[in-house]
Image 1 (cartoon, rainbow, N blue to C red):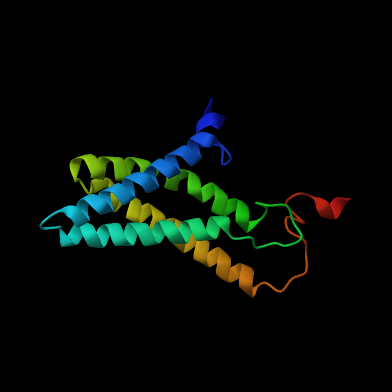
Image 2 (tube, rainbow, N blue to C red; image 1 turned 90 degrees about the vertical axis):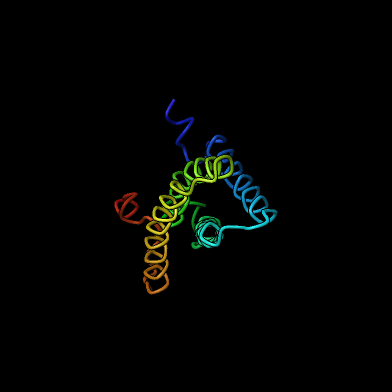
Length: 144
């Protein structure tokens, strides 16, 4: 049952991400149509949206040409989209219906931590000049 909700290839995770993006766009549209939009909510939604786009960029970028998809660092990026998807769906849904920014603050913090980890891994990946294949030691490829 947990695999249904938390597997990185689950359709429910994808549905939550789509729902989060849809409600975020609806919230932005609702805010744009408001006669006196809140500057704080506008800034928070801008930060929230930029963080999501950067996380999605990291998760969809192919880093290893000679390896299967989602090996090594790519696996971390893909797994990082699971809490992002659920959090976006909850924060955007609550924010759209009630205008509350509590979960928006929480998600900005959580996505900031994920972005920090992603950028650190990207930096280390770009700095690494080793020709060792991906997952060479963790998958015990060196033993065969």
